[in-house]
Length: 406
Ligand code: C5P
Image 1 (cartoon, rainbow, N blue to C red):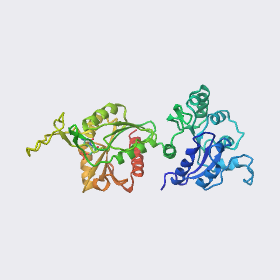
Image 2: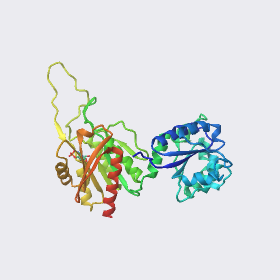
Image 3: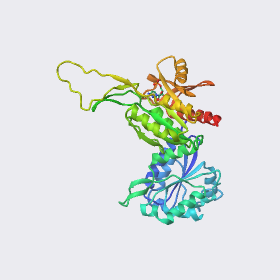
């Protein structure tokens, strides 16, 4: 099932150079399964043509409230009632001012005012020059629009079409897509602080060599995204991986298991849920050499002594138990066989309420996985699916368990 399947969206374009990004946004929304009705202001039509938007959306574009194509001549009523949400991208400073005052002298502003306010949410992606963005009038108008129930999606920072640099760029189409998908997810973890470890660790032998493993971090990153979509405040402690940070997630990059433990200990006191997906190295070289160990031609090989790494999950689970179980801990087990027996044993050994088993070799680096959830109540299989879909299901189970705890 696509992320925006069965969603009908009104995509409103207002006057701004960021209109050129709206073509790509429209395509992404449709690829994600939505149907899209484009509505453009006269100013937007100065930047991009309705022809482009019609071709991409496969629907006639509306622009005027006097458009006689609607049989009842009430495009503003018809179009706003069909929608699951309205997204204004780009939304100009002028249009924000109109929204703040409830003006309704063109089709798009009329639709914003005429939409059923508790059934059709209004999402706003502002786009403007940085001075316009920081002007007190715009600040005031944005606050009013938010107070009236508008959902502000934020702006990007960087180079602007005018040549200046600062806040006010429209978010990139992919960022807006992610925000919209997140908007429609149930807010099961609202108010929760979720701490997640992901990826491998890297244990240095010398400045140029080390020991690591094949964990891609994809499952942990998918869980971070799903937790954020569910409304949680998310901190992701990531080993060395080259994955993009999910929208709205606080990411802390670490290298070794010791670094990971330190970052986790720093954030654990404020966390309510801890999910350990990282493939932490079990051992590290006792002493990392300061300089590269050279091959000297003698044929002698270096001898490495190892020491055991701290068990981050067991450490946190233990301190959570000592403080009455305030932190709900979830562990992962990557096994090659006997998943159920190994997962049950690991749950008890780690002292965690919920343990998630998966077959390591079948999932490393892949975009899909299958999970086996083991807790005191029994087991539950989540059959093979994308890591993001599984992550959302796992988050729903965790939300259920933590709610039950009160
Ligand atoms: O013992 P094992 O590595 O199989 O346990 C896996 C679970 O424990 C995972 O949740 C992993 O993130 C966590 N773990 C940890 N610190 C370690 C080893 C494993 O947090 N040193």
